[in-house]
Image 1: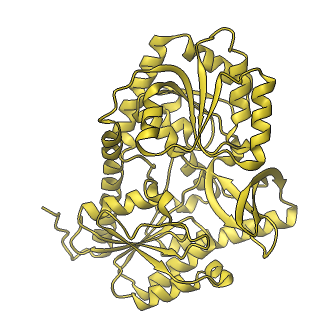
Image 2 (image 1 turned 30 degrees about the horizontal axis):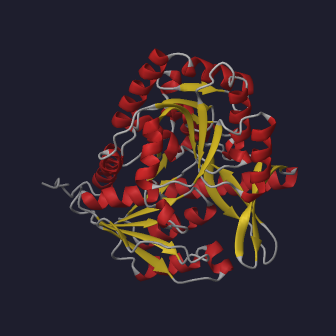
Image 3 (image 1 turned 180 degrees about the horizontal axis):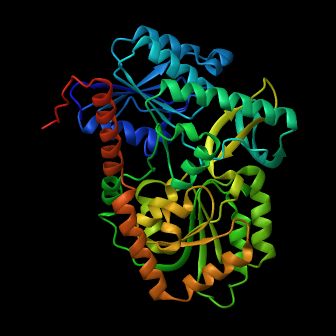
Amino acid sequence: MNRQVRDVVLWFPPFRSIHVMKDPGQIAEHLAEIGYNVKIVRYQDRLQAECPASIGKAQVETLQCTHRLSRLLGLPFYWYLIKNRGTIHCLILYFASLTSAVTSLLFKLLNRGGICIVKMDSDGRLYRSSGLLIKQLRSKQGAIGYETRPYRRNLGIRVLSRLIGELRFRILAYTTDLLTIESPEAMERVLQAHPWLRRRIAMLPNGVCTKRLDELSRSLCVTRENKVLFVGRIEYAKGIDVLITAFSRLKDKYPQWQVDLVGEVVPVFERDVKELICLKSLADRVVLSGPVYGQGLAEKYLRAQVFCLPSRKESFSFIGVDFKSNSGPRPVIWREASPIALVEAMYFGNAVVSSDVGAAGYVLDYGNAGMIFESENVQQLTTCLDNLMGNEQLRTRLAAAARSRCERLFNWDSIVEELNHHICSIYARKHPRARATPEE
């Protein structure tokens, strides 16, 4: 680390316990391990979900504000920056939103010597005219599930979105020191829209905490079984119906194989998935295991031969865009840059097959560390599964390549070390007279 850059604030408004093992928690924890004073700042959760007070040496601070408009505009965090303007050396923001742009501008005005980094957490598709709309259905007792439907923006909304996008990226270009994005393809998409960001953007993938995965699996002694594993939310957006349909075409050819679906079944999708399983006569071949965590989840990975991620194209990477009204459902535009389950499966030695969504091509080394099929193409997925289920040597080769690639590129130790290098380089550039002293 750089001795002159000590105090780091990571601003992630929706931080909860589920984010501890994801990038917000892991970046904070690993930066703290190498000597930074790290604080994760979040909003008080409206659902009162549990959140740890610390993650390793990194602290979690909650801003007690429930006023929706204030939170939407970012006012509580602006006030936090003003109060702590002299004690924040590095600010890490999430999502390249207009609020992030305004936040970075305020931080630059308050602390000209400070470092501001924005983690875009995006697949690079900045201006979408269509996609999937996820509605969170709610009752007086709370959330009761999700409903997914396609949407298409009208011309006026698309023009407005582009204008706002141009404004926020112009502000980010002049106020931030670094924008990070998760894959080369995503970075290229951003640069096609905003080529003048080239000197400000760097590729920094997401990963897994290999030490914790080793701890979870160290005491397990299991053997591989003929199973195709999926881990994630059981919903339309994840392409579960594509996987079930593809597997049904191979059920007679491979009678010993099963599909294990691990994760919460979205209530509005539960009837559909069970009906599809019955329709394809797979009641004894497709298992809905429900949510599994910790050592139990590690065992699931270690027992399975194949891991499949059949996600649909529009639903690959989470960005919480909240349009909630006082009554009725809450629509959320849903994407995902690089799901943690895909990288976990690589580390646990599964042969992986994934749809060509988000960063999947880069993560799987464009087919050298796993098989890739066109999203929603049942025939291509059937062919991939056929090749993997019927060829043990292919499974072994791809599993070994995936494990090696994960250890080399997608572990948080090396990722945060690269981030630390960026922080030190930025400080040296902004303060040429100061000499960065490495931590012994």
